[in-house]
Image: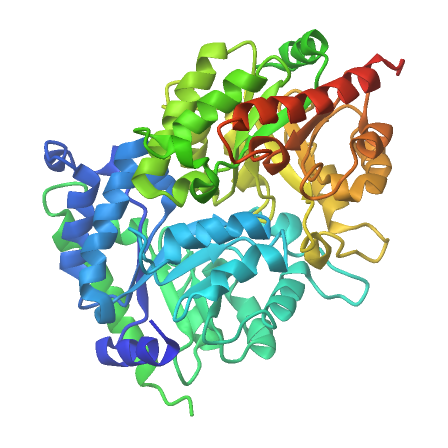
Length: 278
Length: 278
């Protein structure tokens, strides 16, 4: 999906909500455990209950790989289902990959290639290994790299704020340097909602790029704060919530409750989007 | 495998060679393509031809994930095979994972859990997200984190040498800080052979930790240089070669040629190990 289509999708649904499909097997409602593929069935029902409110879905690979072969199968089936809604939803492999060029090329093939079984629109990538670890992911048309910049967890303070003699922090260096490897039509950045006050600085470096913002919901970040510093005239944000939506209930009403949580966020987003930013 | 067993293994085989199973489907010898599972068959023959010369095998996940479900199956079968030689070989998932704590815990389960289908001894982890992204991998007894420090690729220069006002570089900060999260019995570091001259500095920070050294062979690093700066009295090195061994020939003699290449390296290692370092 290209940038224009993504912006249109956001305008049409009046939402910039991304639902994280962190579908941990041990948290799947018990009444689904008799299904052939409980994780897929769970994902499908979550998608059906939220797709009109949601512009993106983001399966995190850890929750699938931890189930081995069966987990990979659940992921492929989930993507086959999501890819039926091709222009109606943006898909993100939350994989945080990155390796030497020769190897990243293969990861890119696995997750982004239109002929692959997954065929995601975007993948999250870790920046530590530099340009040749990132650029292979940029070789597919209308596909996106979402590079880790400032993450939502406590460990973000360990290295991401490491600073040079001019006061520039590592995450700023990552954004500045990597922005030259691609453009605002094929790169986004992960910026945690728990660090919303730093969004203003980040908007100085990249005024137009989309930001994927985790940490609203279970991790405690505020949507209003994120919007205050991060929204642009083209929206420029994808705000992710995972556990607070998909595990809102562990009962047979899990999809209804997920919809209620997604609706709350979408309603707030609709108001935020309606404010004039020209 | 614990540190004592690893050191014994190195002494017994007179080798610190790790063979990277970067078994790219398009490079598998054509005569194997009729097998049920060409990648597994290729790996099995490589292992059989080199196991007396090799102390570790390191499948890189990208080459398996790029084949989707079938690739994951090839990986599981390869690990089932390698796990038959439990005390005779150390296994490394070259996965370069790392995510928020709740998620890294699931990756750790996928790759390190003794009851998982993979059950590796070690996994490579990316440091960008800090302590809570790394520590879940340290919760399994006799299992290892191999943290990226200074990688062998060109992109290593983009961020890993980013330096603070005291002249400390990011990779040094990564090593110093993370060394406190574990110890020399459950953490190793990736240090590229193409940066061998920096090994002396690294040995100042971590005199005892094992280093996993890629970049000898196809990427051009020198084994003698690596040994000069990196060897300790307990060896302290695992030197990896991938393509230069496994793809030494693309013909029916691929396993014989792989053995010849592995033998050359093991012979050189035997001499290096025999020098007194007490």
